[in-house]
Amino acid sequence: MSEKREGFEAEALIHLDGLYGLALRFTGGDDAAAQDLVQDTMLKAYRAWDNFQSGTNCRAWLTTILRNTFINDLRRTQKRPVPVEFDEVAERPIYPQLQGTDPEGRFFERIVDEEVIRAIEELPEDFRVPVVLADLEGLGYQEISELLEIPVGTVKSRLFRARRRLQQRLYSYAVEMGYIRRGK
Amino acid sequence: MTDDQRPPGQGVDRGGGSAAGGALGCEDAMKSVFEYLDGELPPDYSEKVRRHIEMCKRCYPYFNFEQAFLDYLHDRGVKPARSDRLEERLRTLLGEVDTEEAEGCD
Image (tube, rainbow over all chains, first blue to last red; front, side, top):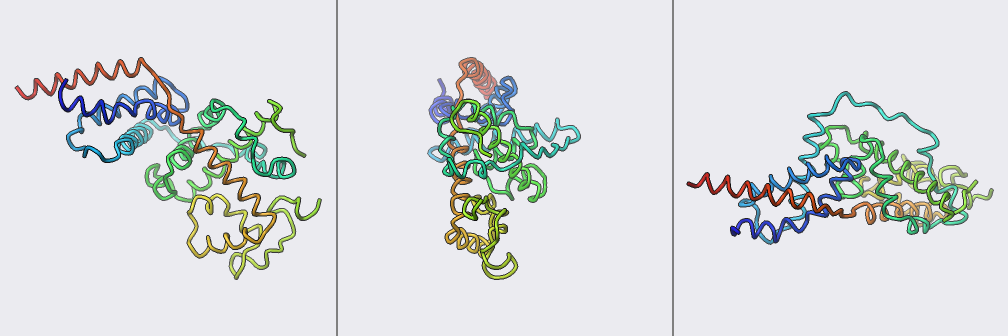
């Protein structure tokens, strides 16, 4: 095995599972698309491996490649955006129903990871991508705005609506599972 | 329903004043909840929100709740996934790149 390959396996390939998880969130749980995205990312990284400075944050470097690859593909394939219709119930805050019984949101901790992941992956794409960028990757509004080529105000409103939808979805699940009682 | 039970933004605003003036009221603070928690507000406005929630017994638990939700989303959403098929395919493709590059050097 070449020295380059050894270095890549030791520093980059160890992040494969993390990248694949992130790719699944980006693609809304589309396994084939997520695998292609990770494959493209890793091949780009391997071809550019000579430029990578060993010992620096490889995970962050790979994540940036993955994110840019996903967004470039998105721009290339995106048809005319379909606006997500406002759903009054799905986007209502849940805190008023919980403030008497669970104001600290402890019920969240009882929800299995798979349900949270499903909730994120099932968001409409226009909502899901900003949530992945902001809430999972920690990017700021301005950076998301530049990446997605949408105004900062749109980033803000999509995040707001997406988070409300996620809360409602997790709240309904928790009620269904008997973790909490439906508030008035 | 007492004032303390009323959700923020739906009660009598006793925060004293509006966003344009000095101190913030509940409604203005509540409107900025995610921008505040995301650290996206201008520093002076963020400071006004901070001062409001410190003093407001309705907004304080509400902001805590939303922070707990965002923390939870971050902690649980970033979950790795495993695919042996992907790893196997990738190793084959890396081998092909090695061969290409070795041939390119000849």
